[in-house]
Image (cartoon, rainbow over all chains, first blue to last red):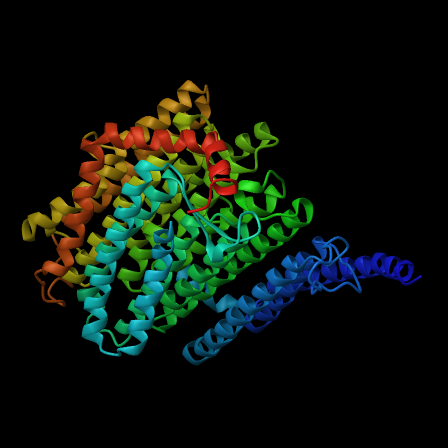
Length: 125
Length: 485
């Protein structure tokens, strides 16, 4: 009975997560296209979270069966620990990058007094 | 093969040393000594490669495909070797160009973390690990490009960061989908799709059309030492990843992908080359040139015959050396004349004939004049194109060669031959370039020359590397079944 409940739940969860990934990507792209640097950073946060969820989701979800097992137990039917490890790494890297760009944005604001990417045009000329 | 970890562990060790010892003089000499050590490490690994064509280290003792494998084949070996030579040249160059800067020490810390990322990307055998090395490389380059904290640099760096971050995210998404479909991330274990994600991600890193806009918007802003470092290494890691992915495991739908690669290569070449002709600022001309030359490398990959891939590898090596060298000389010119603008400099041939000679070597190498490396690189690619009946791209490559020649002659005429302009010349007292400014160019010029004179053995080697790429059975067997040291 427990497995039946889990399976039904997994299907629903996957759909919800898939929609969430789509929504996050959409919001992220929208924010990236704005002119403000702060909004750009928010967009990057959205997109990196969407990507993390995507990696997690693509490997399949298995509720109620953690990857920690007793010795001698078979690995069949257990959740795959690898994508979780990947996502963990990716989250840490993403955190580092976001901290860096926030610091950069602060420096940028100090140097130029603006948050508008359109003010950047002069580098191209 | 535990020594295989050295190209990534040693730079880490240097970084820690540089963080502990906070003296600027120490940083300078540690930079040179560390790069010399990196050269010897890569030479040692290169020699080992002769006895055993694929070296493998299963990190942490986890067997492939469960653990992370570090793999070195001929392509990685060549790339490591060229990278270490570049690093040596730039570490010497940085002594005079960053000597007085407040951030000299920080430069050296991130110089080593960048080299760690680049080396790691070249020797890893795991897709996710490649992502991690890319991030190491990117974060170091973010810091380096914003190092001076001037207005211009901050502007340039935001553009640079924006597109490169997007590339990384797509790369990661591609990895996720790849894993979902195949259940593995070991490169030797994969045969799969999701190619579009990786194509765009590496296209951004390699500055391919239409993803190259971040490069010319940012490369002219940082200190010239940083620009030379980036010019030689960053985009080339993208090209390396493209070659690795598209030969090892994106092998379905070849017709479509090769045509697409060739089309993108042609557009990259022509647009980069044309844009370069319209500028009068050496760094901008050279930045657009990087893009144009990336096209040639991808052209070799798109032709996809052993000769084509060998040409791409040869060209990448040649370009890393010669392109960095032109940036180094441009830095010296600006040092002597106080400007990167070609309109404000001139008469350098009379003033310093040796410098003129140092510029001529990489410039002619890039344009493809016979005794130098570029001639053979282009010759191989064009021959491969004709052999494979890819006449369109071959014609484009020849045409772009003329654009390259034109830009190089422009710099030559303006900076060296033309009489110096009346005003502005004495604003900056003409400096005699010192040994730290000239020696790196001499080293890189000699390498360009040697690659041309010894074209036959170098070509044979790249040909072997290309055959190894197109028939990866040895690679796969060594990683999956014979990987125990």
